[in-house]
Amino acid sequence: MVIGLLDWNIVMTCFEHHFHQALIGLDQKKLRRTISGIKPEEGAMIRALSDNQLLCDFSSNDYLGLSSHPLLKERSQLWTDQFGVGSRASRLVSGTLPIHLEVEKKVALLKGKEAALLFPSGWQANASVLPALFRLSLEQTGHKALVFTDKLNHASIHLGCSAAGIKQIRFRHNDLPHLEQLLEKQKQVNGLRFIITESVFSMDGDQADIGTLRQIADRYNAFLYVDEAHATGILGENGQGLAGGANGADLVMGTFSKALGCFGAYIAGSTLLCDWLVNSCSGFIYSTAMPPSMIGAMDAALDILPTLSKERKQLIERSNHIRKEFQSMGLDTGLSSTHIIPVMIGNNEATLLAAQRLKDEGILAIAIRPPTVPLHAGRLRFAITSLHNDAMLEHLSHVMKKLAAEIHRGSSI
Image (tube, rainbow, N blue to C red; front, side, top):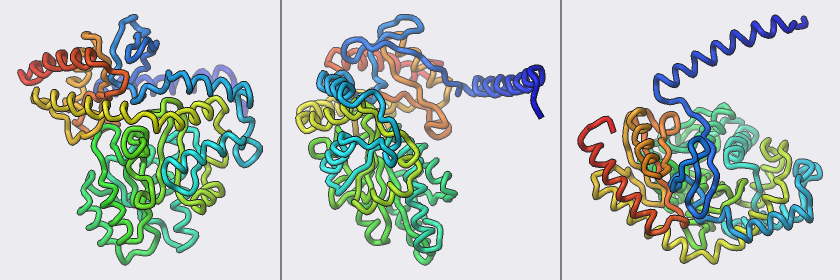
């Protein structure tokens, strides 16, 4: 039956009503998100398009400031000139260029692994690699995979598990004795075992104990999968991250869109692992290959990374300083130990008001609310970067001192 224009308008009117009501519900819970455009200015400064206000950006994941580095821009343009704007096809059709293979070799070298594969985004990597891995268990053992995940893992990891029809066995955040208890409880159950965690947690700024996780994985014959999105470039030797090398994870996933300043993602592991994913991972098989412009920026970022020891050291020192400053004000920074520093506020309305107070003072720090974080765990998320100078950090400290006084008074912020 062909739907006429009038019938179509009736259908859409019905759905518009549902959209409207759903958005009203989000408004009432203070959970509605809106897109706010910005224009980058010099260094860590941005200009809000909504009101033309100049703000110091403490929400960016451009931790080393590489997104505007001349070499990344130069190589991005150079490889576009040489290879074109797009890659024309997926990697298994005719989309694999020599530059894809070159960058994958560099990623494998950085991570201390045999091989690597590039993906369009970290979200897509987690969401499609995990189902491919879990399929291995069903094919090889006839049983579903047993998947042990940190409770605070990124949403893309949870999606990858649910897409595979896997019921996660979740251990308390960074509670490795609890993980062992769960593994022990499932010891006699058939199926391949997978332990999945982040190395640096994106909303809490704390770190997983990769060494102990490796030992646990070995004891229980489990595959260790680590998301290194927020550690790559900052932590470990030459910015390798925390989970690379022979004593790290079996599979390391990470992104180029944070400390490496551009876009895209990678996984690194054994040659056989990567060969399996080439044959089974939908996100790799059915996606057009990464464009030459981004491959050029990736390549340049990997070349620059080993030269940034001074910047990494300074970033860690400044992050430690700001965290201590916040704590001295009586602010709750959770278990943060990295360049990501949350300030716990609690309810959604207070979190939004706190973010607005900072914006009024020329500081952009995003209000993070459920479902990104657990219920009643609203917070301001500060990301310290190499672009923040001493004056910016002093201003942040001054403004936060005033905000802390309001919080402690129990006022409505």
